Image 1 (spheres, one colour):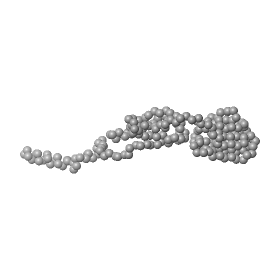
Image 2 (tube, one colour; image 1 turned 180 degrees about the vertical axis):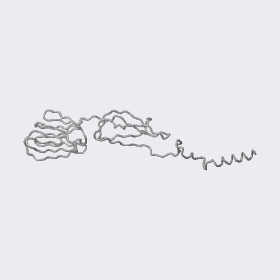
Image 3 (cartoon, helix red, strand yellow; image 1 turned 135 degrees about the horizontal axis):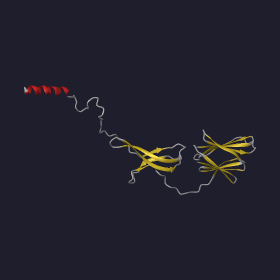
Image 4 (tube, rainbow, N blue to C red; image 1 turned 180 degrees about the horizontal axis):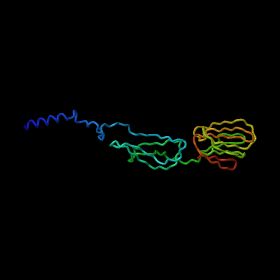
Length: 216
């Protein structure tokens, strides 16, 4: 009798057994699959970030990375430095020093050289001189008004004078923040349009013999 009961019990166990015990039971949602497969990625050499012309300060850098267990995490580094948006920001690894990561690759300091204004355009009654983010306008004429326009970004200045010199256009060399100067005459005044290479605010200062425009 005992043998018969054992045979019946074994029969029911065989009926409930799964075909492959190494896969999880169906409809079980809380069991995640893992894999020991490693994706081979190239080593980081250098990544470049280019900011728009409206950028003036770099507040922080956030790096998103993957851990050994596959989880994603972030690390934020405060910077809070003024930047020149014309220059790219580099993210690279430093193989020559013990520290592993350089978030910003700083350019070597150059000897300070006094830069003089360069004359870029002139008419009989006005001349334009450029130095970095400044333009010196030398004229005896009074500036009536000035304002900013976009598309393209440009500064407009009106000067008092009765003249009929027609139109004047001068494109400036590559590398200047000021890219083009246009002069047109109107009744009782002439208009100077100074095109820029990006988005700026500006200020104008009266100086002896003219004005200085400073881009901000």
